Length: 206
Image (tube, rainbow, N blue to C red; front, side, top):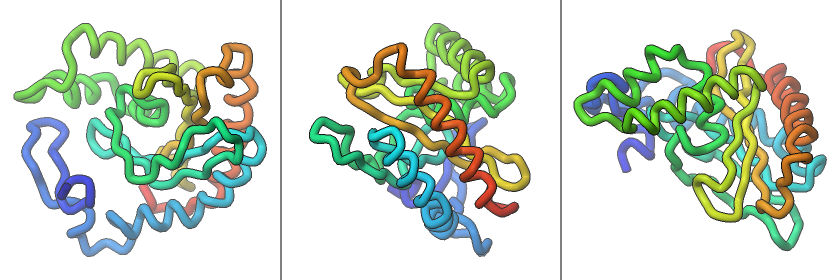
């Protein structure tokens, strides 16, 4: 719970717990930073939701997990519901994989394999590195029913004015509305949205 509320953070190398962003004196740390991200990006989430008619999410990475900061739900009867506050493994969620793809390979290994209690097996880490490589090539990441049966998602990072990837925006939909031939159009809409959203983000948020 302390990690979830940003009062503690687990060191990504040796797994010890340290004071979190919510205990920092910085003006855009912890809860305040997340609130600012929601405020600045909510119009872009709403516009994207209206464009693709699917639920749209904003998430950030916290160590080896992703945390949903906001959801804009589509009005369709069959839809993915509000995920705000949900925490998922970063290596499984589309937004998490998009954010992990920003990290150097050596750092990913430190994060997932070389601590006293490795997060992933060698086999699962190999799968993650393949996913990350694919994300770097395409610019987006996919979650095809990995975190929840019947739900798929596509995610892409949002960069601030310094070019730092500080969050991810994702589109999530029931699998029946996520055929392979729709991925390209969703990826295009997502790329346009993240580009516009990034222009509204000042330096220093990362």
